[in-house]
Image 1 (cartoon, rainbow, N blue to C red):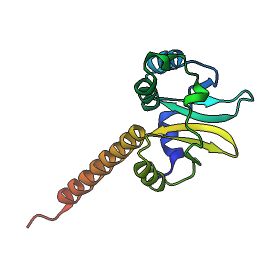
Image 2 (image 1 turned 180 degrees about the horizontal axis):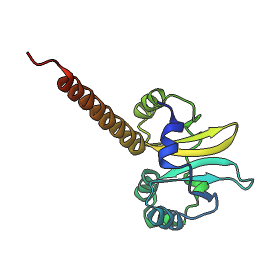
Image 3 (image 1 turned 135 degrees about the vertical axis):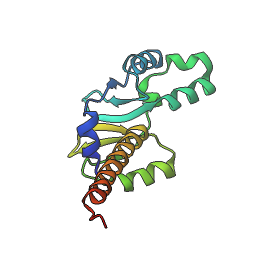
Length: 150
């Protein structure tokens, strides 16, 4: 399976913010979109990092309420773990697991193509397993129905 298959089901829309956006506004954006991360763009509109819920929790732990005045560019993880939409999900998930990451940004030729979370991967795998299970049941049922009666 490749990431582009997940994007086909999920969609390629990515919520982005500028580097000057403060943590309070980032939290509001995440809540409004029901997401766990936002991609940070620099002043030229290029991807410069990612801010996740975990980054915000760590900032609150380190800085207390002062964390709310931090800007996205101060929290953004860079360099990003980036993958191509044609990349095998299995290879990238292994890397995500090793680094304890929940999101991977998908880029192709320097252009943002999407973002996939570990939850998106799990959902896709479950749907594929359920489909495979139904097909196998149908095949088994057809064989039973067509078997000669002795």
